[in-house]
Image (cartoon, rainbow, N blue to C red; front, side, top):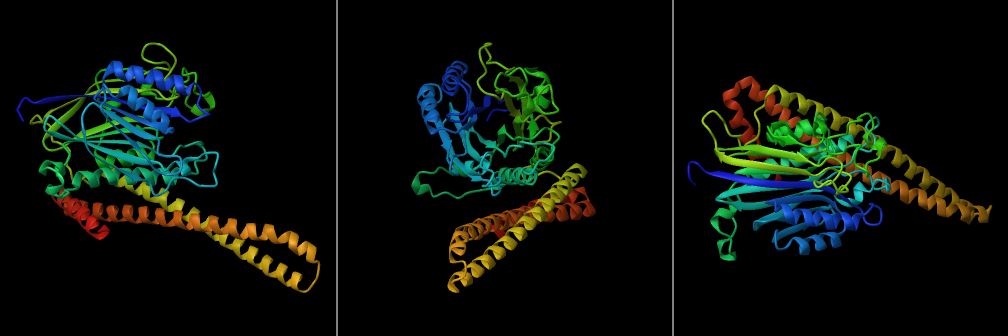
Length: 440
């Protein structure tokens, strides 16, 4: 690699709002999106909410001359909705489905059925290894009474852990199967795009940025063109309902392009653009979300720049503070899950008691007809409450695991602060190695 090496990377991201039968003008929007992507010829196009695999196959055929590599991430019952199109060959891909993802009985929200996840692509560009992530976290729905907050914080933590784990990994793939030695090389550049459903100052967003050291393209660029304050859902968009924006009349920013470089490299955002309620050529919008377009430049790190460490961020005061907040929120969510599980167990007990009473009445010949009529509702109560109990027990265990991880990291952070800053990198690196060993 030459000392004056520079890599230019053009990235596109959009939540496509592609719900079959429900999203307005879906087919027309997908067609126009394909035309635009072919015309612009980005290096990477990362999309969310492509819920129909037929839409993905349509785009794949349409974009094949410009983007020969593509992948659709499948998970859950409906699907993750995540897909990517690349001008460059995809060396590896994988995905991680979030442990917690809403409630199955909240059918009108549908998040539980979608299998929200994070997808990873590994690309080799001019001798560099790029880890490109695309994700979509649980929706908010009601900011004043957010019943999914603990789940979204847990998802943000899982996402951050997944990114750091992939940075730290060093796979040993069998050469006789055709894997070259550079396949297992650690990433030089990390890119994360997606709909986080988090405002910039929300707990989950701060936790993700502090733990991974990722930079926000909107905040870092010196050349921004687009909607006011970089909002990605704006009132000018004809598909956005004003009640969805709540107390934010100018719009909300919940879609992101985040990045960082390691291995002695420096990455900057040269330009960053968003659409502004219509497509880039002033036509109807591609989606109810605004599209993001970033031009990133990677070069050797100047002497004054210290590249982001691959072992995770130092245990600085902001990180410790956000870890405490996350621990408290997850702890509260876990207590709520335990409460619901307890209530469900009482309902199961009541249902079993009713069944026993009805059996006794039927056997004794007393009001046999009434007993038989009440039999079906009682069985339904036992089965429904039992399913409710099992789900919330599972939820409590997932939140308990997240709380334990946060508690462990907080303990290591305090230990590192007590020993001094020179010991922090080694301590955190050792912690992550031990965590991986425990998982194995």
